[in-house]
Structures are given as structure tokens and as C-alpha cells.
Image 1 (cartoon, rainbow, N blue to C red):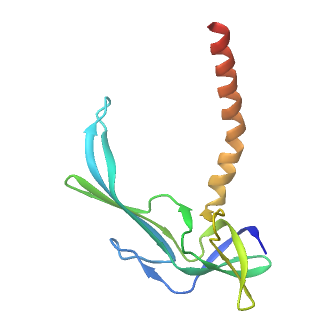
Image 2: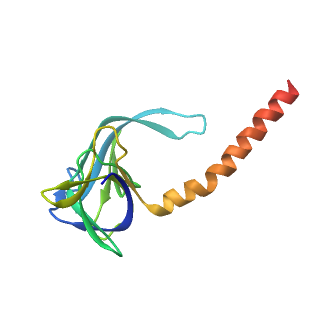
Image 3: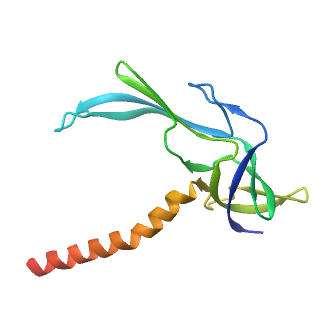
Length: 158
């Protein structure tokens, strides 16, 4: 047992209900933002005044089978699914849903003879859309090369 990476479909065990839009889900984040100043282009800026996240127990299924995941302390990156604005505040939620195709990195251990993935001490415990990770990994070397070239050009100019 130890660190694992699994990509597969999520399976809900016990649904959680999100606090604002009351959507049944595996997990959610909920953010309240307060309107701030307008930037130079006239766009309104917002700052977070409340954030909460809750993720329950679920399964992740790949071609080899499924494994149970304890979502406590799981970090997840998902686009905002629902948002409402009213007055000077806006409310946003993002969800982990049944059949979402996600990549999970966490610590596999044994719980009463069954494998479970969870947060263990200071290990990484994260779930994200694999398409976003692939895009990031594809563009990161290009960004690093650009920044290195820019740094060297600046040194030469100086």
C-alpha cells in the first residue's frame, strides 16, 4: 500500500446535499464572494468572504474494478457549476457527481481487509478532471521555456 493514481468514473455511495443550490452530489465546494472595486477595464472584482467544502465516501471505478475513497480532506479542482449574483454578493458551487470521469491521487491503505484511499499524514490527496491535468502538463514546458528565454534576454539587455 502507498501512494496511488487512479483515473475512472465516480460512483456515489451516500449523497451529500450542497448548501445553496441543494444539489445531491458526492461532494461540493461553496463560495460566497463580496463585490469589490472595479478594475481599469470596468470589470468588477470580488473577494471571498466564505468558503466551505465537503466530500463524502465514494467509489472510483476503472477497468480493473473499483476502490472506496474517504473524501475527508480531499482537495478537488472543478469549474464552478452553479452561480447566482444578487446585490453585492455572489454564491458559487462546484460539484463531484455520479459518473464524473476524474483522476485521483491519494494514499491507499487497508481498512478491515478492504482497500481504501484517503488522506494520510502529509501526503497528496487530490482529485481533478484529467483533461485539465493533461493540458497543464502539455503547456508547462512551453511556459518554462518562454520564461527562461525572457529571463536570459533581460539579463543580456541589462
